[in-house]
Structures are given as structure tokens and as C-alpha cells.
Length: 236
Image (cartoon, rainbow, N blue to C red):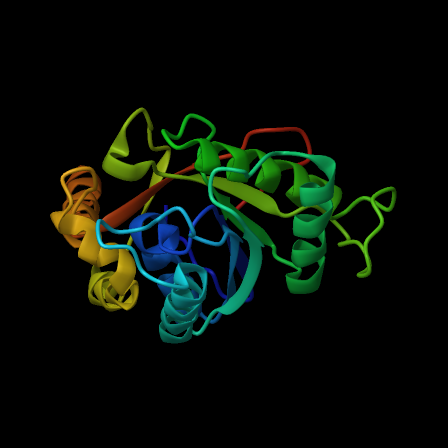
């Protein structure tokens, strides 16, 4: 299967500021190179991601970091600023994310997989599934008009590939270096790699990209699965 993202609008709905770099930044970069408009919707503010030596004003620091990464990707950035660990699939948050989708007007949404290890990731995935449906519903009122049709939804791989069975892969071999530069923007989190309770992010990202690439017969890849539901399937 050869994907071409020309004329698409691709929005990644992410729990935390550095999740795109681990799971979907390569696909977004490839979509951008094909001519697509791309966006990042980051739901949590990253306040729970303190390194061993605490950082003052971490929320502001992480906001600057994700903005710098988004600029490298040439992506629109939307931040909901919800504290880490409190994210839930409730109606007020659905409406906030629905408004983001209506403003960006995606044709494709990327979201965390339902069986992801992190509670914030699972909540973000549930919110993305609901909001990407209701953004086309006139019965859900926000400031911006509804989309003509609900966008397609792809589930992203999980961190460390745990419990995720890929349906297809996106070749990101040409964009691995960009993923590395984007991840380097998240200095507050990259520095946590020396903490025994946290993973070395750069190494984890490279290993996963190359492992998925080996499965797909390319140098580096990202894995996805489609959301199979009535009125949500798309031909590519």
C-alpha cells in the first residue's frame, strides 16, 4: 500500500507534549512533505513530568518545548492545558477537543491506541474517538461550524510497541533525523533519561522506529491501525 497525503489535513491528538516524537512525528512529517496541512492537539500540560531535580515553572517550559518542536514540523499547535493525571473522557473536555477539530478541520486524526499503557494516553484516545465523530454533528454545539463528515481515525503505536498489533506501516526513513531534532526540543524530558524511573527517550524512539522498519522492510517506520466503525472507514 502506497500512501499519499496530498490535500489531506492530518491532526494528531496527543496526551503529552512529547508524545508525537515517539509515535507519529515521522508520519506527520511525511504528510507535510506530500503537501498536507498538519496539526498537533496536546491535551495535557506536562506538569507531572518533573525530572529528579525539579524545574520551576515546568508547564511554561514544556509549552515552549512543544512549540519549538511544532515549528520544526511546520504544524499548527493547539494546547488544552489540562494537568497530567486528570485527563478524562467527559463532556466538557469532549466539547473543547471538538472545537479544536472544527477549527483545524482534519480529514485524518491520529490518536493513542485504546490499550495504551498510560491512563492519560487511553483517555486521550477515547476523547479523540468521540470528538472526531461529534465534530461533524450539528447536535454538539461549539463556536465553530461542524465538519461535513467525520474524519478518518488511525490508532498510533504504543510506546515500546507493547500490546499493539500493527495493521499497516508508514515509511519514515527520510524523517527519522527530524524526529530526533524534534525530540531534542523537549530538553526537560530528554534529561530524565538518566533517572532510573524513566526511559531514555531518544534511544527508545530510535529503537522503536528501526524495529517497526525491520518489520516493514524499510530503515524506519511508524505503525498504525485503522478505527473500524460504521461511517469511519476510508479508502486511501
